[in-house]
Length: 178
Image (tube, rainbow, N blue to C red):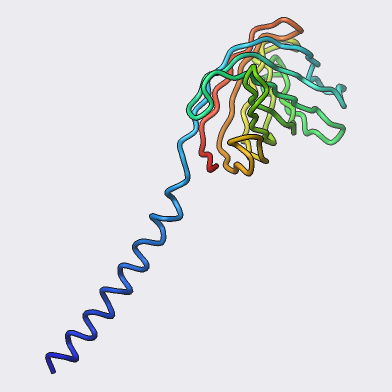
């Protein structure tokens, strides 16, 4: 009876070790990814009810975990199928547009890059042309050099004053695996 108990206990212990080790190994390469940046509006377009097929382009410098000091570039496309919502009470607020886009983090040396896709909304604070906010998610689509084959995702937000030359602030937080 004792040997049966030892065999069953040993088998249960081996199974417990096998299942407990799997999640730890799978998560070992997933790293916290935080990037903060500041820059300028390169191209802007109003997000009002009649504006379609235009691009908001934001770029600047960023610092972050795993990337150091890099340049950032965000392209947010307001397409013909973008939903537009009036975000103010009584019609006094600005508009929101659903946007898609892409972005990159690239060091000044151009040796390493991280590329990602974006989905979210651009919303004006109040009236047409007022400061705007982008809130969305990103999914890493790849990279170069040490980031070749990188994957991950999370949230990206930015605020910016409208029109070319306006100030942009960027905040990205999520995970990366490379």
